[in-house]
Length: 366
Image (tube, rainbow, N blue to C red; front, side, top):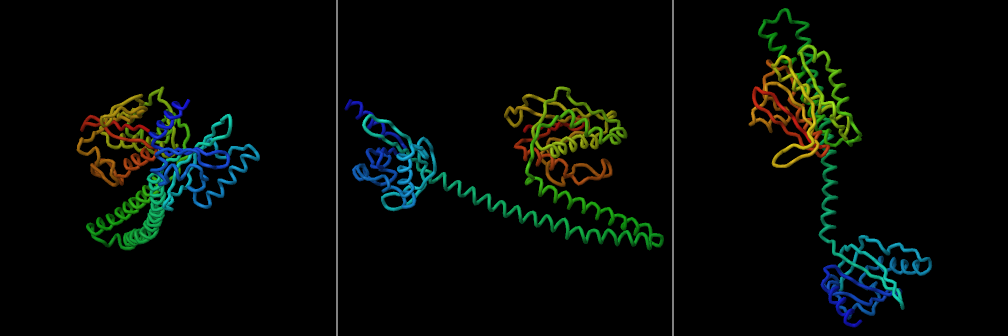
């Protein structure tokens, strides 16, 4: 028996966490070597004394009430649980520990076991994260304020410029030379475009901070609804939109997922010279990306003009356009930026596979 007890004590001294046992009156009966390293008390200083000596005053008072309550009611408030508490070293310094309290039923007396783990670094990291979140919230508030100013105060003079240009056209249009009218119309067009860019910038600034109400989204029905809403564009450009019959549902924010598929489908129509124009929406259980195998990958393919590989990253940058407005129509160049932001909001990734003149495939996994 003595040999077994000695072996057990030797094993306990190899454990990294501090281990202390106390009796029902809170008197320390045993402590391992890690306890001395953690608290600074030798085994002789701890054994025979009340466990409260390693607790700050407020925790010591709580400990008395826990023991009294347990003896009176048998209720185990802290026994069998793990919690964050503050311990106190011999030199008086305080630090956070993760404390687990267990109970051993002996023949002669009750014994309680406390396992303490120093979580100073973890607590510091958590505090740093909390501070970061507070700073981020403050930064987001400042960004929201800026976005409001951009949407309100900048749009007002733009509208004034736009209106003055229109008034000049109405009042003196017949008297102005052709070159002057061309420049006047250009002013009107540019103010409209600038207002659109401000609107897109405002939307993008808020997109990442929308609280997502996720739900099960039927992708087949979603794409068919988009096709119905685009029926005039589809008819005008002789577009065929195909959706895989067995395409599985997505879990996410329905309005944002609608925007993803809408932008990818419209781009497949706009940047396309084929006749007929074909858009295919399909699903891959697995797909390779950046040296990794991703699961549950959705794809939107087109037979459009394609994209050179050197621009695969550029196309997702806000206001980045690769083609002229004269050839493919006006736009702000923000659509794919919104797609990327939405997918990232859903903890996903989006990428493109394309070859110039042979169409593009946009893939994403969430």
